[in-house]
Image (cartoon, rainbow, N blue to C red; front, side, top):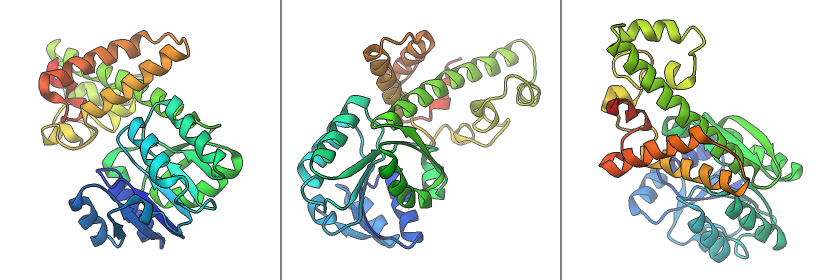
Amino acid sequence: MKVAFIGLGNMGGGMAANLVKAGHEVHAFDLASEALEKAKGNGCATYTNVREAVQGVDAVVSMLPNGAIVDKVFSDDIIGHAPTSALLLDCSTIDVDTARKVEAAAEAAGYAMVDAPVSGGIAAANGGTLTFMVGGTDAAFARAQAVLEPMAKAVIHAGASGSGQVAKMCNNMLLAVHMIGTCEALALAEKAGLDPQKFYEISSKSTGYCWSLNDYTPAPGIGATSPADNGYQGGFASALMLKDLRLAMAGAESSCATVPLGKHATEIYENFVEAGNGAKDFGAIFTTL
């Protein structure tokens, strides 16, 4: 299968490489020459123009920074330039309204399209173990599976157009709340005189179990190996978590949902990022406690 991959950043680069490993012919594009060189080294054919990259392909996958860029790239350079037989898959994390707008424009032009944001981070992107949350028709999802499976540990049909983005914003809002609670509990245990390692051993095997504690422990030197053991470098940047939380807050407002903990988590990450910590892993909230 010929697959155009648009956006080769921290996530997209590894994802494109895994498509090559699966035997697909990957036409890769990014604005950064370094990303293109790395993609070329991973076996991708590289292009300096989106319209050229999507010529004659069977599928187009995008992994882009925000909704405005997704809208522009699809409107200007993909829709009407890729074959209408090509399946369009946007794996970016963007707002629900833009996802639905772009998908509607694609479908009006004769394309099948899905929104397919991911969970798992850079390590999972490189390892081919992402979870994809897919919004779109049953027929489009069936086609999308063949493209997504080489990059995934799970590919789940969330529902109609935009449902993947709804799932992503809710998932990451929950993750932020879990992470803040985990950090608070670890800090409280230590300040109250309990060895944090002992707290980890107890809570990770009882009702405090959660991914943030068990698999991504935000305190250095205990529990699972995580960015906390590397000065909070790598992992999932706090600025990206804040972006996702703001998407969730916008979604909550438009759907009249009440999310007090989500709102407070957003305020905490806003303060953290504004203090110059945007590049640090989101578990670095632990250092503020």
